[in-house]
Structure formats: C-alpha cells, structure tokens
Image (cartoon, rainbow, N blue to C red; front, side, top):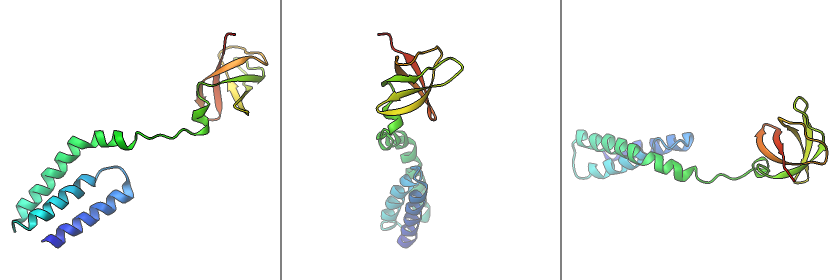
Length: 139
C-alpha cells in the first residue's frame, strides 16, 4: 500500500509543478501522512480518511496565509518605478489632445484633465498602457 501512496504523492507533486496555484501542495503533505499511516494499519479506509480530511483541513487553514507569503514579493518594472514621479512637459497637453512628458530621461505620451503648457512640471497619477495621466504640480 505504501507504493500506492508514493505514486499519489508523485502525481500531486507533478500537478503542483505544472499549475503553480498552491492547490495540491496540501495533498502532498496529507499523502505523506497517509503513507506513514500505511505502515501502522492495513485499513485503506483509515488511510484514505487521513489523506482526505488532513488535505482539506490544511487547504482551508493555510492557503490564504501561504498565498500572501508567496505573492508578497513584487518587483517593480520601469513603468511601476515612474508612478508618482515628476517630469517636464515637452509638448503641450490639452484635455482632448495628448502631449509628451519627459520623465527619468524618457519621453512618454501623457494625458490630463486640464491644459498643461510646455515646460510645466507634472506628477504621474496613473499609468494606462503606454500613456500616463498627469497633473500639473503647483510651483
């Protein structure tokens, strides 16, 4: 019976490796406990009960904290880095016509709810695809 639980553990490991959604990792742990249980009892019902009940219990109690821990590290990309930075308008921005803003040495297409003349200082409010929404900074 131990060989069968070892196969279940390997299948769960394979499923976890291809999905990366933290779904079968708890059943890997409960499979290991069921494997250990198989050394002490020959009853398949008890082993299956340990596997299912422990797997569901671990899934319910530890999934959210573990997902927070795994998803905690978010690396900033270049576009995330310019959020909240200031830049200079190089082409006038009007309410209906995008302009150009230079931020961190790069030029970006920018839109605004107000008209902003050339050489004004602006702050990045939002990033929508490759366009920035900016607001004039009061000097």
